[in-house]
Image (cartoon, rainbow, N blue to C red; front, top):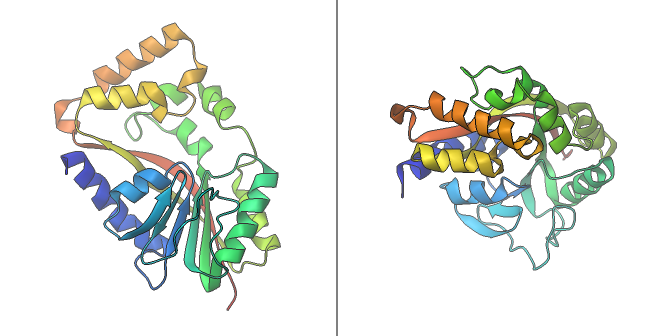
Length: 236
């Protein structure tokens, strides 16, 4: 295991218990972070497919499972975590309904979206990605269109009968890198949402600025992104 894999595993190992992992029962994680989480966590993985991973000793995902139609049994999970797993209000409703079906009484559902305001307002000293967003704030908003406001996720949980509803802001580790070349390649390949929305010359200048900001002592480097999560518990 590489140094970057170890630090990413450590980061998720510290975070996942806050979301219910490691307790009795299994956790389902859905969204584009599911695969990297599945690769990083030290918790036993029951099964994983694209955009979905079951953590702990849990059920097996059937072929064709999606975030809105997993095919898993009713009340078969202790917690469900959906991160940027919908792109419209209609799909959010479907995802929440499926989570409600899957969760056991007393279990918790988490709905997360990237915190656009925090990403735009950050400085390079706190998040290197602000090298993109403080110059091109509209790029990420265009790339992440759709209904992802924290108010909408809270309302979706309320309408489905979850109580109580809480909101959380937290940084989530999304990837780790052993060297500058792999980090720069990942950024240019889309690690920073919206980078594909800026022009070629601007993109080249951005990558030069990122490269100049890096030092060998930065590595292994874990890339964190700010998220807003709403949580709700299914009444017992």
